[in-house]
Image (cartoon, rainbow over all chains, first blue to last red; front, side, top):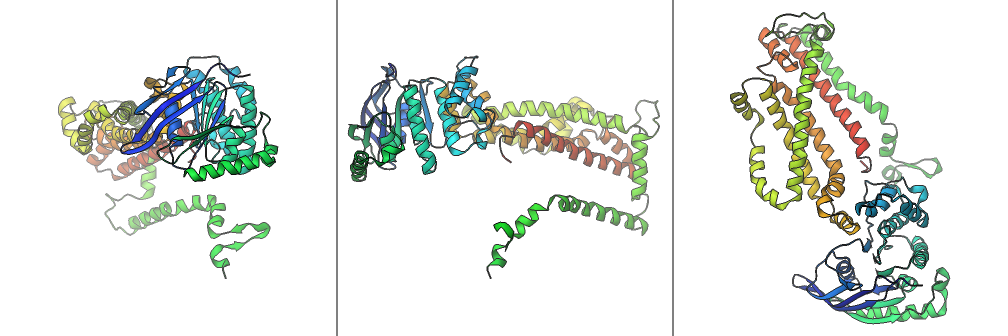
Length: 250
Length: 288
């Protein structure tokens, strides 16, 4: 089943920092409930594109719309999680997860928060402060914090980049399960080809700066992807060709 | 060869460097270490008195000061004339007066300072408007306000409180302004993304994020406020530890002056400690 909300459309998005062009006419169309993984050489403007979608950055030309609504600024309908995490260090995990709903005037957040803590495996750490959590737990909490607002669109900016390989793999499996349970349109920016192929329904390849979408393809694996997928011949050969493309693009 | 550099390998693979060894056993020796200087000062003082290095009228013995302190706090209180600065038995009342003066002025300085600091740190407009003014005012020495305050309000407790207020204000303003300006942009973006309206950001993000540094400013401010009490009580009042010291100077009672100095030292130290303990509860999230 796929969600009915959260179709993301970008048309001709251009952005530059002063004289430095960063995004050069980005066109994307992500259907509701699908996950788009964006790969590209480092420094190509992947994160900037995500920040544009989140509404943190203005852009000079083009349009970004979610379900037809143009993006003009940050909004609870577009939740973004960055590599460094976005938890407030002075709030407990429970307070962090409940922050969004509470700010939006929802006083009865206990059930939502308890559910999300359950899903993220953080129930036992509800009263802990972010600095008391491990890196993986912190990122799960950050994702829970964003999901508490039930955003139709989830933006992940190398959310597992700071984690060790094993934890990252576990997080990949966890995110897959999560997105299967709660279909949410997701844009994942990463430089990790494994991550892109494990999580994406679609794969977008960006060129070196200024970034353009140079290739867009469907990922041919089903929803039961996990660590076993990494060893499948199809996966290995696809990974090799994608790697080639990424290296060519840079 | 290298063990002299890298430290001595202890059993169970634990490397004990001189630094870790010192850290382990530091609590008790450290505390005792802190007593060395006071004891040396006390001994030097006693010897200076015994050898008559200074006339005994201006250098009392430690014992005389202790006796005076005992009389100050525990002596039988004489009650009577107004306009007289009492010493014997008046210790607690003087102390209470000084503490309340300091506390009132400090509390106002904290409230004004945090509001002013938030304004300066959060709004470019407010900063452009007020920065030159506040920076110039800050450069005025505290004592320079005293003549003006006494012309306006007379030599009385009110002008004293104004001096304490001014002295305590700037550390709060500076700490709040700086720390608010250093709040990570990512925290602001996260709050905006999660649904916090701009008008509520100061309460949800700026203030809590900046709190540890603001608290450091508050501690500095409290110490300054307490040192300003003596300036505030130089004249125009018959109550307060400072008033007692001024009267003692006029009477040539050096041991009473020294009692006053000890009172300031002990209370200042205790106030800072207390504030540190209390504040630790609120800013425990920032590992310090």
